[in-house]
Amino acid sequence: MASEKLFNILEGFNFDNLENPEFQEDSVREELIIPIIRGLGYSADKPNQIIRSRKLIHPFVSIGSKRKNIYIIPDYLFEVNGKAAWILDAKSPNEEIIKSKHVEQAYSYAIHSEVRVSFFALCNGKEFVLYDIQKPEPLLHFPLISIPRFWEPLKSILAPDNVFTVDYNKLAKDLGLHLKRLGFESFHSLIFPDIPIMEITQLDPDQYSISGGLIVNEETYMVTFDFDENVFKQLKGIIPDNAFKMLSIRRNDKRLVARFSDRNFLVTIDCKIGQKLEENEREIFLPMSVNKFIK
Image (cartoon, rainbow, N blue to C red; front, side, top):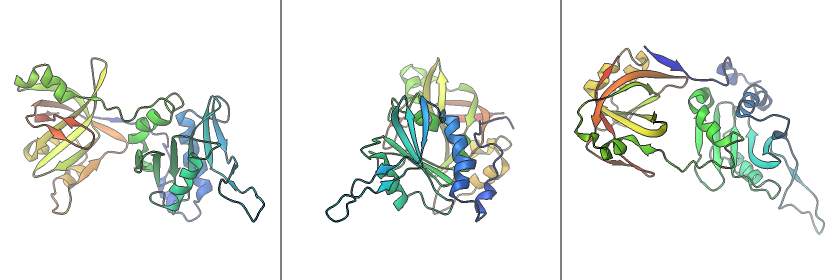
């Protein structure tokens, strides 16, 4: 079973600790958040500086005819070359960080007149969620145990060199459409060696799909590989047995997804360009149709 282990900024941390009632917000900060923000490239020193617990004057509070300064305090404010870049709020493992008052609180920090940043994040040790102040849904939301899978996307937005220039709405070109335009649709066998399998999704009625980024001639493309039940069976021994068994079962109420949190499983794919264009809310793409997997 060929695989490549992903970089894990939290290597060695035992996530069972999160079930200990004494593992609270301070532990989340010390054991989990500090390694993450240092790994992103921030420290106590300029130019990429961590500002801890900066007091911000509450913009809406006054008492009687006299103004009384009431402060709100984000856990972490990050500055790049003296300019506020994003904020992060830590919570204990038993606190919700999706659709809760904590999201509203972190948003209020991000839009504060003394801050004004585009991104705010929350982490409770179990999950990490990143928001853009202009978007209702998270940009990223993942179990922290899966951070190896999400580390590169996280860096692509929050690393000091990216945080002011990132365009996360820009999509990579679709490889299927690219190859079709180059005239490869008449080829019945195209070989792609060592394709990393990050996750496998069940599709209706008896299909499966793998997708991810692929570099061709120094340019990154998105590619989707679709395949049927018979081809799926060839993945036995290529992916972990528990994932293979789970995906072999079809449920009536939902389609299953197997995600591999800390490594990619490598496989050579024999395929051809598919016939049907697919569409989602962000793009139109042309999946590749898998003939077989080659071990």
